Image (tube, rainbow, N blue to C red; front, side, top):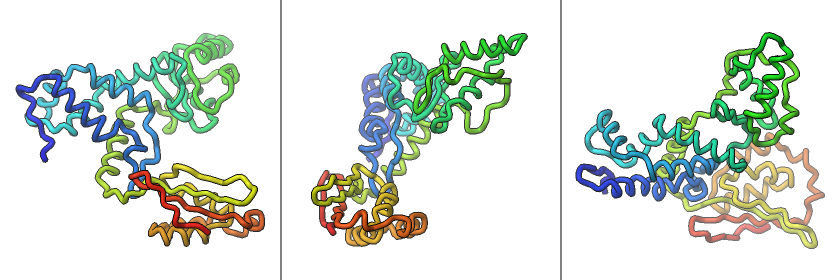
Length: 315
């Protein structure tokens, strides 16, 4: 069945519906949990503010103007998938998404923005940070605002500290804002490669590429592998919703169960021989005394796309 739609003569509401349907039903609104499967796992979530921005933009943007611009650049016949990607990678959408992000932050809703980052309210830019390393990101931002420099170093530091307190929003593992006040003048310099602001268009392109790969990879039916260690009169040790067995290997190694895990995976028909070999190399059994974990019973759970949990693997 062709996905090509000739727009001439179609009402605008139908055009918009088809475009929204492509995002909401084919791409599942970039919901990793709804699309990811074991053969091509999606290991990162899409920030909620970006999903909200996409839905609101598709609901209100000037679709006729975008169709006109698209036709000037491409063929007269519009492929819905290609048109969606075109619309969401324009500067118009990037500006809209940036505004939505700012409103999301100014409303004190800092959940699911980015794991660690600093938002510059004046420049309207979000800068990802390394875990617990907001200070270097703040200094990078300060270095881009030459207007903060004064005739004296003391006044420059005062201007920069005022900027930190009033124009920056810190998200993630951090201290209080006053902890990051400048103790010395931060001079103008070029952006470091790992301190560039978030590129919304690049994120959208990455989401399309990641989801296209998963959607075009045959689904083996497995959604994730979970596990449970049980011992009489002891609390259970349980891992849940792991969409990649690699995540749990270290914990199996620490408990001295690599051999049992390998046996369980073989029975389940899951080939992870390379990961098992790596686990043995990086976390050798000699590091972890087995007597502490004696008498634990392991159950490996395999959850399928039909939400059926199989429990064939007990020791």
